[in-house]
Image (cartoon, rainbow, N blue to C red; front, side):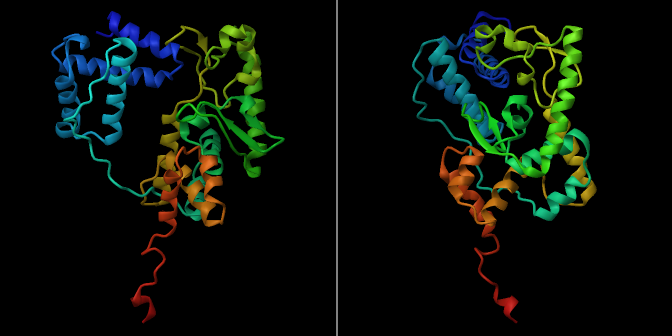
Length: 320
């Protein structure tokens, strides 16, 4: 199935549209699951009933999260609209997985400091960027050397969520550490060039338009992996960025050692960044822009975190 003409067509179209490799893996996986669920019939031979049954199966029997069901739906919409050229049915009987209304977990400044004191090396520097700049873990690890502007104290986030570019702040306190990291990457880059591995994967079509830029130091990842690996799409031997699981594990260990009982992940630092800025009195639209939220309502959830404890109402027991 993974080698079928249908799947190859899906991969080609995804790459033509410059979708990420993770999106490619996810879409291909959902399409394969859908074909197997439909009795290995070609998707062009099945209709609304089968599509609805598959998505309802995910929501009702598998009890997947709303985001998971939505990702499966997006994969099928992509398949029918762009590969099969068949209008996607309305899916009138679709049962949507319920998205629970949960407030984000937010650390106090003291808890952030407590966690940082139990981390070191590259994981600590990445964690400081997550909290200090409000980046997602994927955004931080995809940073290139040229994305960090030390003169203007800002970080460029390219192709963030929703394929949007934005700028966020570069904290003064980590500038010297980042400059040291840049120097380490420069030395590693020179070493790779001598070994014949100096090329770096460029975003979108830059590699075709500017082939010499693959050797450019400016496009090297800010947090490169220790190993040379083969790109699954192009077959190029190059040095990718470090794995997000490497950072997640370091954060998890630090949280356990700190004794903090909150459910903390790398994304918790981003939540804390937004909440602490609002607590300091910064305008919510400024925070929205720094986070890269499309809708203000997404950023508004952090105001609920600030107002926790009965929306600031003092309990009568505290007056006794």
